[in-house]
Length: 76
Length: 222
Image (cartoon, rainbow over all chains, first blue to last red; front, side, top):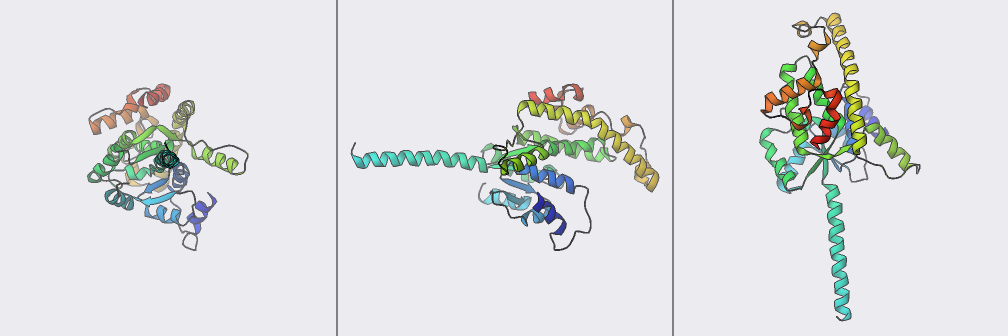
């Protein structure tokens, strides 16, 4: 959670200039998503931000395009 | 049976046991969750891409779980300023969620999940229960429906404030200050929009009085 908030504010090495109204909902979504193994989002900014957090528990964050291409090629 | 066969048999059993354990392990790893916007037919998963997901769901290569927040988010569109444009999209989002997600497993509220995870990590609690049980689900839905009116009232005040402060033309055009006209009854508008969009009723919103029987409608949908 702390890592998520930290990466949210300082992901690019500096504080983000603008906080979106949906950012709070994103953080809630991601916490709930930890009940699954993969979180699929089409929000590139959120995916990038989450990817910056080291996660050991096999939790993966995938962009929708990557998820669909995986589904097409590997079937999972 | 000689020793060799016995050993192989044991190995066979072990191999079978491993297969079962592995399948259970893999089953767990099929669980995925979609961001709410992925269900959006315009900006998320396109209609043309839908068969790919449906095939995976049918063949049980994919299992989708969701949380109540994700489900409640599109409902806000039914009271939005641009309701006419937003409701068909939101209706499609809700329909996809209900049809694709495993309704037996609704993820608990993030605050509880986080608190339990911290306690569990600190050794003050056992394993974190990730999903709502039937009783908790009913309680949560009742609470959300109860809170809906207060959220609706504050939204109306915010809109009125915005309209006066900024004099935005789109906010001023044809918008009444009355609560009911700005955001009509959740249950009726949701049901009507979903039916109008899809030509069929969605199981969850059969009830006309959402605040009284929303939880039981939800329960029957599961």
